Amino acid sequence: MKRAVIIVIDSMGIGAMPDCTDYNDVYECNTLGNVAKFCGGLKLPNLAKLGLGNIREFQGLEHVEKPLAQYAIMSEKSKGKDTTTGHWEIAGLVLDKPFATFAHGFDNELIHKFIEKTQCGAILGNYPASGTKIIEDLNEKHQKTKYPIVYTSADSVFQIACDIDLIPLEKLYRWCEISRKILDEGGYNISRVIARPYRVIDGKPTRISKDRRDYSVVPHKPTLLNEIQQSGGEVIAIGKIEDIFSKSGITHAVHIGNNKEGLELTLKAIQNELDLEKIKITEVKNPDKSLIFTNLVDTDMLYGHRNDAKGYGMALEEIDVYLGKIIENLKDKDLLVITADHGCDPTVEGTDHTREYVPVIFYHKNIEPKNLELLNGFDNVAKYVREWLNE
Image (cartoon, rainbow, N blue to C red; front, side):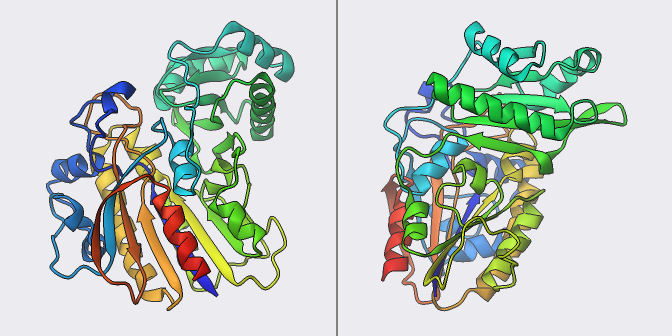
């Protein structure tokens, strides 16, 4: 069986795109470059061997004479710098129209519909904010009123935060499902509704990452995932991939609590040790092709958005260790793709995503190493994978 493995290191951009100022970003944003500099160099020997250090200069990454892979810089065709836009383009769907954003919060009509349909009584917040800060600022009111905290960011997101010791997790999820329906029926063109559960631990509101859920709009056109599924193949989604694509084109899915778990599950999938029956969404009989699609979110969620460059660097070094094991276990008919979906530079002002180029690495055992230079569009990944699986 021919297989492809796509690993998205969430937010690992490598430099500002020319139109970055249209997205309120600065030309100095360079997530990987600035993290490497802040950390005094990164130890990423496996990524260096594949050619990451040959794409651009990153402190600590060796420029190797004989890289193992093909590598390139990719620019984004779609308008946006968010998770859904980036992942959809990776899977071959380029957005003609950007998702809507709400720099001043959501309009009264939408909030009224949310309160009416969820019967939550009222809401707190309704402004763009850092997720960690807004729960710190509004937690006391939340405890007194039990009203959900609703907020957005520079991305196209409708986020709902609740203390799940106060509001049961199932109710938070139900409110998110209701919100998704309101947004879809109202034509609001909002990319994601995000459940942001937290608990007060040692007096501090602390988000519970493993119980976060994203309720994405369904892709309006078929993606690479749909093509594989409809041809009888399997698509194994690890991490928030299932949510990003709203299950469209996915045959198996498993959520993760952190990058380590996602990397271990990816390795198990490559070794054919993943219990697919437990994570099955649809039946697949005797597939002749397979896609393992993994999102590693910690770099973005825990470190990029929280301006933690040191933590970001440590997360990359952990990923690199696992990549060594993943490469060792690849079969002759396996293709490995490593890329990112946008930037989130923890060293520049603000906590939002950044509009950046991303790296891409293509590797299989018989590949001819090559610098593919600049590729226009993240959809080059879908094209490469499609050709590999259909050879």
